[in-house]
Length: 190
Image (cartoon, rainbow, N blue to C red):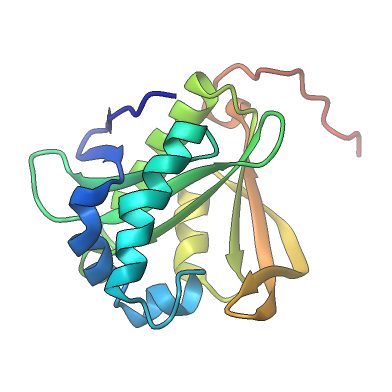
């Protein structure tokens, strides 16, 4: 897929690229980003060069992951990173982290809602999963505010820095946003 830029009420979401290396490096120095995400720790400039300079653009080109850098629509610093990763036919996983000084303003929730609509309408996704290590309350709040239903806890499902950790899992379906699904959905009868 050709890279696309998305906008929301307050935000600009554009493909992550080499121009973002410095901002990604700075943002990933936050101990919370290194604690709760799978970024390397310590996070080096070489890690940022590899991810923003090569990995993210190559994943866009291959159609395996779509990583966006999120900025204020009217200009300003990096607010967050967010990616949609293919996980099989019609399914994808979303991952994100917010820059420390920009948390608590609803930016990540707004970006997540916009990116979910794009994934459903442009990528043909009909299940978008969110996962976070148990205890990552900030990530869970963002997902829930964006409409995700937390479905449970998966034991040992998250590999982070050489350790298996328990993970919360949640999902968003197109119907949760009033959108049609690519495939019919038959909910379980209770």
